[in-house]
Image (cartoon, rainbow over all chains, first blue to last red; front, top):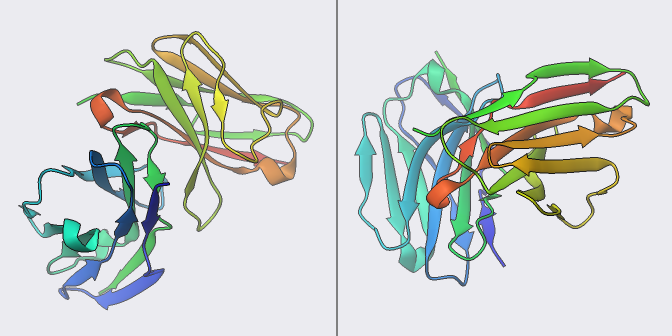
Length: 114
Length: 113
């Protein structure tokens, strides 16, 4: 069975602080994909990144970076120098080659205060 | 990138009526689409997998007679909430996953009064 755990329900930071959102996943499949989405108050899901199970390279995109570690089944997301506009709910999700379904974590609500 | 369009974005209906939500893939063909439901401050829960030309596959606990899914073409899946009640008020969002990417519609906020 597939499972995604986001242990942090809510995080509050002050602008310019760095923040890391944790994601731990479970799957028995060897081919899988991990995603991060941002959901602002409007509700729309904004795609941030997709990473496949064979690519453990960390990725940086502007203020965003991702740390994928298969040894610990984690795919953590760091926002550097956070801004108020980063306030949203962030979801980590998993799909596997065999299922096609996207399984979501419970989400982490990030509040960035000025 | 691939685009999934969902309509309407917001709907208010009276208790007992039915509501249809459309999900279209605009620039690719989707033999499979997914419908999710999200209650306030909760995660997205998969309701069903919509299969073009065949019956949808529903997740455990989802009433298939209440949430009718039709996937009559390669670019359109519809979710009909039948005899809606206030407890059906929620955010519904569809997705399609070509090549194991996951593209989402804009979501539909349903309020049943």
